[in-house]
Every structure is written in structure tokens, then in C-alpha cells.
Length: 268
Image: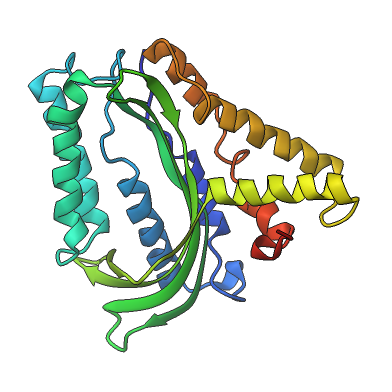
């Protein structure tokens, strides 16, 4: 069984990444390159530990195959992370550790991951054109099959919405991520809990939040997603992989509905 690392979500993100009120059709090409490079950096970080195998482990891979995955990941890190970004070397070391050691005897299989949505604003280019700062709000997700210390196999597929300030630099003609400021992070599980709690209060009081039929269907999708991930242990890697591959990241992204229903202002 071969499961490729899917980045269709990145294509969606690129079309969704809009700088403030700037009209997309007239956006400056340099701004677009900066935003594309940032998204690339976050997609690469979701590739940490990626490999392909039939049992979710690297024990069936040759040293040459493992080295090929390492070389591919390292090249992407060099492309999207600046030479002075501490994550550039740290992520390389984590990735190699996963492939050569952690995933040798334990199922630790990355299925998918990447940026689902991204909004970039306040892009400021330096006078010499070699650095830029911007504010970024983006949603990303990861999806992997993992075996815990008790030998139980689970599907882990979190989403998260992050707000942060970013500095990008230009090296060898390529925009790269240099640093990210203090991040404000909201987990998808918390957003789903907000939505579900608001629904329950609406049922109890006959007010608070009134969900449309379409929104009710979305809540049902969240319930099914949580059942596949939080509340299920699988008997085999293949069974867990099938469940993981059945999850559509755009369907289980709670933030569009969470924002639509008022976000943090949802009645508690």
C-alpha cells in the first residue's frame, strides 16, 4: 500500500491568502512570493516524519530509502527556512530521528497535513527588498496514525488556528521564513467544543445560538471526526490508515463555522 503525502490543501490556501484589502488580481508579485514562501514553510513542517510503508514503520525500508526521504526533507527545509532560523536544523534532526529510530519499531505514520487557510496582512517590504514583515492568521492540520506505549493504534488529526507576526528574508533569490513572533493559538478541538456547547444551550433554552440545517450537518461531521480520532482504538495499522484517509480536512475545519457563529463570543 502506498500513501502519498497530499498537499491539495496548499493549493486552496494559496488562493485564500489575501493581504488585507488588496485586490488579488492586482496584488504585487513580490507580496505573492512572500506569502507563498510562508505557506511553503508551514507545509514542510507538516512533513516531519513522512515516509511510505505498508506497516506504518520504517523497519521495512532500506537505508538508501530512508536517506532519500531525509535528503528530500532537508532540501525543502533549506528552500523555505533561512540559514539563521533555528528550526531549520532542529526540524531536520527531529525528522531524521523519527525515520531512523522512533518509527523503526513503533507505528508513527504521517498521512497528510498542511495549511488549510491563510490570511496575510500588513506586508511591509524593507527598503533594499531583502526582508519583509507581515501579520499572518492561518489554519493548519496534521493527520497521522500512531501507536502509543500500550500498543494501541490511534488516528491523530488535529486542526489549529494561529495568529502571529512573521519576518521573511530573501536568500539566493528565494523568500524564506526567518522568524515567527509570539503565537496566539486556538485548537480545533476547543472550537468544536464551543460550537457543541452552544448547540446544547440552544436546545435547553430555546435561544442562544440557532444553527441552520446546513450547520447542523457540519456539527454531525465534527461528531463523526471525533469518533474516528479521539474515541476509537484500531486493531491494525491498515484499519487506522483507512479511517485517517477518509477524513477530509476541509470538512473537519471548524473555524469557518466558529467565526461565523461569533467565535469567542459564543455564549458560555
